[in-house]
Image (cartoon, rainbow, N blue to C red):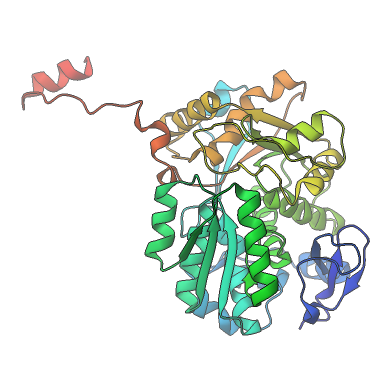
Length: 410
């Protein structure tokens, strides 16, 4: 273990601290989630040396100074070549939305979603601990991620999914050799069964409350600051279970406390109108999230009606002066099309919601978002049916120049 770097696992509620070697998913005193507590002095000293240079082999190597990695030699046994994700400035869409300083963080890893950032570290830790079965509950993207990294590491992966899930995402999981357990229920039911297998069989939980997952995902914030050379003013983050929001809050907070950034960005959580328990709690001024009944939606992702990180998402948004926005299916479909046609970015519904929310931000009284980052959390190929019915294959034309010009209206 790394005593100089990490002080232990700390409860997010009561503050109780246990040694990292006594790994757990929740606090033994109050049951709340745990976080990797990094030494503030260590982070301050390491960050004073500057950010690491990009590493084309793996972001696990790139950010190793800031990650809980005991044996760097394990990286090559689990890596799929995941690198720090791209940050693209908007060339057209931002101007159309009156947000000229808009950027897109393309959190799209080897399995085409943001999940690889957390999964890579979780699987590395499973190998370090000698575990042989990985598991999680997932709406799809996390299932594909754990199956791919499990295959690379030579471990068994078991994923629990809700009844209604994208066939494309399940096909990816299965082709990687993942064992898919379809639960006759929603994400809450899938999560409960997964938790029971973890406690009764000793499987390694790679989703939900795993503190290593959030520790890996928090490098999202480090990457943005390095790429921009400063903190953004506003970051829009899709929220299902909410781990991505909490991880971003952790990462930006560390950079702020170390003096790397002068201000915290305002964090904006985005949910679907069909399933928005955290946004509802925010609007009602509540400190905890009450489960909701999901409504039909074209999207199968970020449809978590009982998010385990909901309470902490509320804290992150309120403490940074952010807000929550809910978007409709029609609004995220429009965002998918606009991103593709205006920026060349093909996003799945769960990723496009951040852009859909941006169009509603000013109307919500948010004011000027300034330098803004939209988190695009997955590739459109994860859910191509979202817009498939909106386009038809054109009828054949004669093979002549004139026919081409007539077809194009030239």
